[in-house]
Image 1 (tube, rainbow, N blue to C red):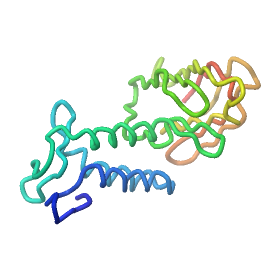
Image 2 (image 1 turned 120 degrees about the horizontal axis):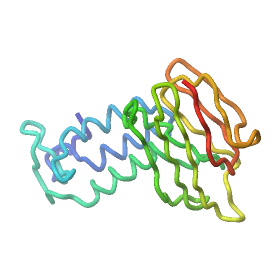
Image 3 (image 1 turned 90 degrees about the horizontal axis):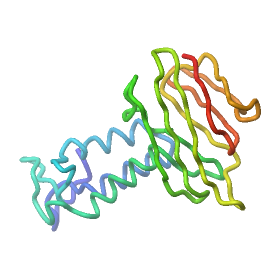
Length: 192
């Protein structure tokens, strides 16, 4: 149910638990990362805040601030890395966003700062069988990614890029499709 800190905090620690979830992301185990993170997310109260420690019996706050800044920062960092991450010169988009995706609903990253520059990506369902991926990235002139890998949690049958050089490869598996794109990709039309 979370990282239990029995001394001082006397409860489950949201920010340390989310750091453990982050470790699972870095090890490539998104499912375990979300399972750990969900053990804390289920305790969030409006306006999406967490206490510094969660009482193991009551589920309420047991210590510290009611709107703990460090816990809030860990939530933002975890979600950011689920949506967008730089790994060995590659920009990974939506890699661990499976639980954030809602079929038929748009998903958008707007002006996110990365080590490559500013990234904006939108995924829009035009119909049940057609999705548009739009990129508006402003990479640094001397540091663009080697490629952009976009992970979507559904099978893609066909990709129509606005330029034939924008799509490098498409890999389908049972649970997702990985689209490897050039760093100058602008729009991809996906047929499901």
